[in-house]
Length: 183
Image (cartoon, rainbow, N blue to C red; front, side, top):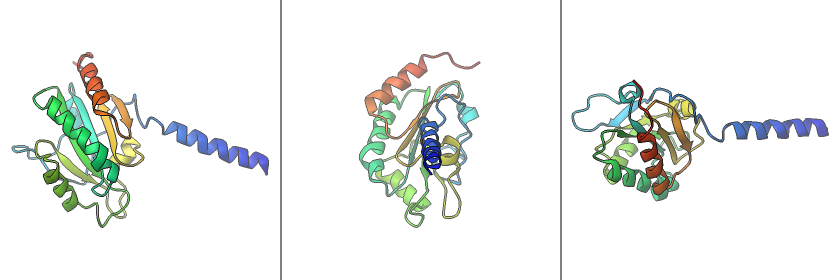
């Protein structure tokens, strides 16, 4: 019995350790959302990562009912948007990645988030619904919300974890901007 218990423990440990950094250091997958609930004025379709190559991308994943999203994630997102608002080398995307509370975390709730946090200047999408796993959660191996992904100009995921503090995010974004851009 002990060898089986040891094997199960090692399996659980190795699985949780392999998820620790999501896909940090790997190429960023496409942004596959079910619906873009808000796009900046003049933008007719959602962003494609290929179109954003050469820019730092701050991807914020949330759920409308998530307390940590409201107390930590959205304030950090707003601070980063304010700090890099006029920077042509930094782009922001927010996506409601639904994995629970399907009746509450709806596209309409995401639209209300756009209004509440004044996110009209960035694309905001919805990924996941009852019976349909969020493609972004699966592709980026997120483990919940709030979740932040920061993608380097070469398309490599540089940060992929729960909340990041504003000062650390700004420092990382500035350092990624100085890295060589793809040709």
